[in-house]
Amino acid sequence: MNSLIAVAFGGAAGAVLRFLVSSGVYQWLGRGFPYGTLAVNIIGSFFMGLLTEALILQRIPVSLEYRAAILVGFLGAFTTFSTFSLETIYLLEQGNVSKALLNITISIFACLFAVWIGLLMARTLFMYSGGVVRSTEGVFPYALLVVNAIGIFLIGLIATTLLQKVDLIEAYKVAIAVVLVGVFITLSGLYLILYLIEGGFSIKTHVHLMLSVFVSNTLVCLFSLWVSLLVGKQL
Image (tube, rainbow, N blue to C red):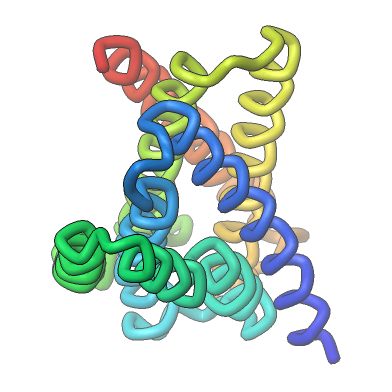
């Protein structure tokens, strides 16, 4: 039951974010081609590869509910094969055979490439010492911090690019940005705390370790976000 609730919450968040991203892409590039669906599928495929390697294949001790919420719920709802199929059929019915074939080709190969890149990046991060630095006071999960930094960099880059292109009230843009950043930093920090707890550390005896990891994650994410904002403004 806990896994079902986790998937439901993750799915709700993923569906909302997919709507925002795909709608923003369509407002920016138009509806002459399925740009929005293509964008969410490529982005989702990259994160699927990155997080599958980080959360499952590396056997990171994080609860099943947390994994289900991210991989099954969030990314499952963020990506969409059915919309891709429907839009391809519409293109064929309209006589746009070349666009339909282009959509099929790009969707398949770009998504496969994105998954592969995500897996490769995560495997590289965890290649040395299992992605952690060990000391007498505990462990420091540097690989997971880098994964979080990559995640918020892409979120910031996408949000900055789209919010500059779409026609929204400034207050709405600020609210969307604050919610996205706040939720990501909070959940990624919680994820690291859960990782430490399930790795045998307790809040009572290792509170300084957990605080240092949480603060480090926040600072790393904020720096990565700042870089993404600089890059996004140039696009």
